[in-house]
Image (tube, rainbow, N blue to C red):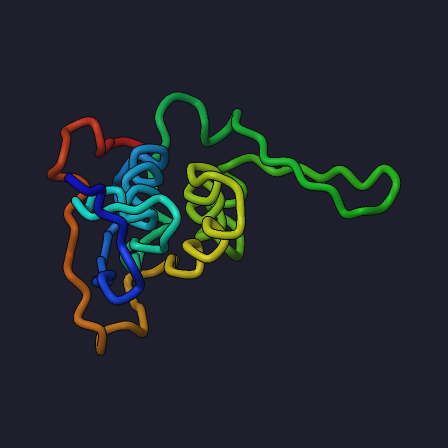
Length: 155
């Protein structure tokens, strides 16, 4: 029996819509990373971009377990001497671009390399419930219903 290896003609991409309201960040990121890579498909080929296009809405209403909202610190460097900066996850969610927290979590769950950077272009994250992709007829994926641990009631 020969091993199946997908070619660009075999790839069938769908559009997936995920509502992140009340969903735990890490669990959402792992599901989205799997969808972006295409590992949920039987015809998965590691060297091809087989994943779906994923739209995440309500990224500002994401939940975190424990004290991560106040204790988890995100660092970056400006490039200047002494230019280390930091913000807590809560500050990022309350700031101008709360969708960056979700994007970074998904990015860190993908393996590094040129293919992962290409797969990240298939991810669109929006802080509110509006998105400009209605024409693609996205299929709704209910992450909350997959597992009771995926959701968290209090903030």
